[in-house]
Image (cartoon, rainbow, N blue to C red; front, side, top):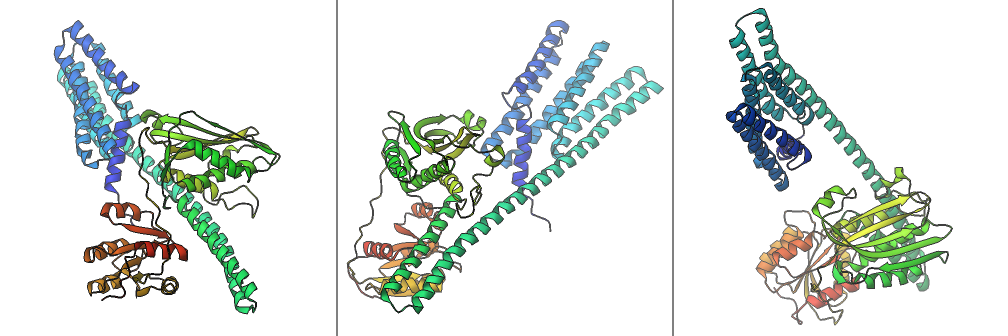
Length: 583
């Protein structure tokens, strides 16, 4: 089956190949321009060949324009400039070959050799930089063929018809077609190489996905086994004390499952973060107190903080979890004891450095949290895989392999990054970079909703497609004095609202079957009832926050599985004074 071709992506790739060939303002660019200008200046001064010099200046101008347009298109990721890039490339090639013909026309064998040297140099340049895509090859080989044809005609005009001139004429005419065929072959080889590389990448992604699915299945099966076993014991037990104990175990298993789901979302960069402004010094002080309880006495902990360090805008809980994962890994790397050093400093990464550094560090001003150990170190063949999900070198039952992948997901979602430096038998240093807040800037923080359960009777419209979850939420809400209307999807809820239903609070899922999703339903509901309070309960609501801000919807977001107290507190905080059931 033929896959659709991404024309925009293909054009950008071709533009990139042109932009990177003798890149604008690079050493190769200045060498190319310098040689051309030096040669044209020498021709003007020594031979009075000002026309030749003018052609060289025009060529250099077109060369610069070609590189500028390509670099511009690449920086803007604008494939619409593709034609402009190819046109300037073709014009530059035409001027280059016209320049070679003009050099050939000057009296003297040395200039004949110089002209042929220019054409050979162009041939080498094309082989090195442009033997990839057929449109580019056609743009540069066509002018070269015209240059060889022009020189062949000049030879024929000067020496007339003879066996030698005929042989030279045929040879020059055949050079470009042969060269073109060679480039086509190189292009095909390049395409095969790219296809093989993509196939390898797909295979590696499938392998990682397979390991991810297997790990998730294993961990969730454990959660389900505990939940199912204790639920069966609850049914069989006649002792209220035992039933309570078994119920507590079910709750703990559900919380472990929720934690695993949270780690998966963080790894995928899809968890819902609640960033606030924090002082890194306070973070490190509190974290050292916490990690003191986790690490054995055989591991000595030291800390250092740069004076006057900038604050960070970060989800404090997720940052603590990420640092704790790094500290636990450091502990496991030092089974016989050692030193764990926690350091916080600042790091500025310029645009040039972000491209140069090997750790995919974005441009910006960061606060760097460093966790260093004096442990066994990480082998080089393992370094490339340590952030993969469910990859672990620990024994069975000693780790899920989600810790470092969660750290990486959290770092990227926070617009930062994480990387590691390690040496065998010396130790490892993990660096977690979080964007710094500009000095003097104060971020407004949202106040927490009041935790009140006054049991004021409110009318709640509950929208949930999963029957078990819907029944559970309906029972929890009605048991605490509220009236509930139920819809199984967004389409049904929208029809109820348009039909005259006017609830006090709308509680809806995000992703549902049907044409109307949770975010769409919120917009419809608020348009119909501007004073309606809204709550979204979803297991995947990370992308909803930005949409809600864009639509200016004052909606509370609760993450599944939601605790009953949190749901009821949100309803009570959102609900107006007692109004009862209204249609």
